[in-house]
Length: 212
Image 1: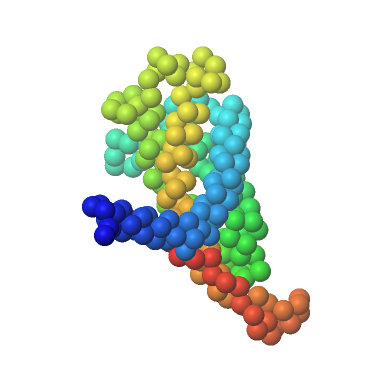
Image 2: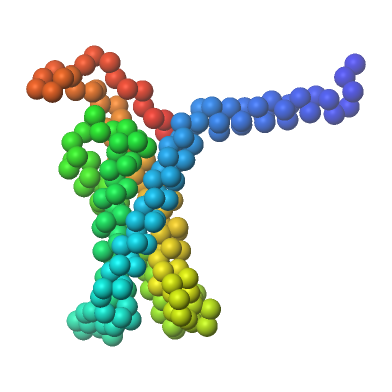
C-alpha cells in the first residue's frame, strides 16, 4: 500500500522531468543560439561604445541641437547622432558575426539579402533605443540619470556613455527574438548550394535550428 503523498510526489517528479526535457532538450539549441548571440552582442556593445566615445570626442557637445524638427518644439541633438553612428557600425559588426557563427546562415543566403532584414530589425531597435536614450538624457524625464552622479567629470561618470549602455542592454533581447524569428530562421531550411559555379543544390538539408 502506497504511503500518503507518494503518488502525488511521483506525479510532481514526472512534471518536473517533462518540463526539464522541454526546456533543456527540445529547445536546447535555442539556448545555444542565445548564448552565442549574447557573446556577439557583448562584443557589439564594446564596438558600439567605442564608436560612440570617438564620435562624441570628435564632434560638438552632445546636448547641442543638431536639427530642429519642423512645426514642433522638439529637436534632434548631437547625442542622437552619435548613438546612430555607433548603431550603424555595431550593426554591421554583429551581423557578420551572427551570420558566420551564431546562426551559421552564410551558406544559405546572399549577404545583402540577409542583411536588409537584419538592418530593418536593427533600425526598429534603434528607434526604440533613441526613445530610451532621450528619456535617460533629458533633464525633465522622470527616469533621467542623475546629473549629480553622472556629472561628466570623467569617462566613468559620463552620462551619455551610461545611457547608451543601458539602452543597448534593453534593446538587445528584442533584437535577438526578432532576428531569430525572421532574419536568420527563414534561410535555415534552405539547401546548401553545391560547389561554386553550380546551380544545382545538394540533396541534403541542414536541420532547422528549432523554434522559439
